[in-house]
Image (cartoon, rainbow, N blue to C red; front, side):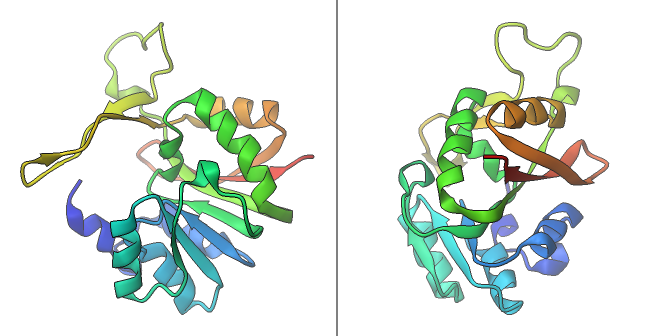
Length: 197
């Protein structure tokens, strides 16, 4: 992925991301905030946002760019303030890696939402990448990645792309109501989840 994607302004963002930002309400936790582009747009709209990333370098970049509240933390271990909106963009839900870990994430994030709160994220159905039948031994949206930049490589990590039908089923099983407020023409969609319990 080109580096400048992480430093986009609002004019360069896809419609689904802009729709998600419009739907943010109350106090927002931007999870996996990267370089802070979404948090900066929310700040410009006078929305109180905390930008969280597991990378200390990313947090430093966000602070340099003007994000007022940027914290280094792993969302799976975070226990603290409660928010009205939890936001994960650029397929941020992918950080779950697989469907089982998505279930863990959905249970954990219930503790981080205020009553009436919402979880907003985008994802894509990547079935179009496969010729013929989908893999039978695992969910086709559970992929392994490795980033490389200027001769340096990360460790391999798992990343999740989840189709809307599978997400609807998993969300219901984990006690969430779900809406799909937007879709694009590349099998992407925006999901809005609300706690049922």
